[in-house]
Image (cartoon, rainbow, N blue to C red; front, side, top):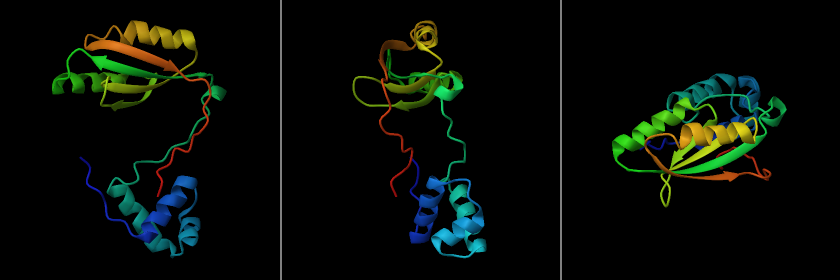
Length: 156
């Protein structure tokens, strides 16, 4: 379990601003949060070192790149031993179509967020890779129709 990091009001302001615009300069960030640039940079580096800031990346428009299908798969394993859970989790890291994966409670063991070029590519993955995995017992898929919200942020 991850240990929660102690954050003050300035740290929270920094995180809010970086969630809005991760490309801003340190000088702009410092101005927005009301401190000078050197201590702002030290705070950002500390937030990175403690793992509060996991990284920086560009948010891509998947359909503009030809990835039109978003789906979720609820996967149940044959056994829920620690070894089986870890092995399946490791397998998801190799599947490029799987963009995010969670272990979950309830009827399934894993929830997979998948992005594919089209329905055929997704079906091929489900049939040839996912259900063919020796640890998989059940797979339930849900195709998305339209995304209605995409904040991608932690509420701070």
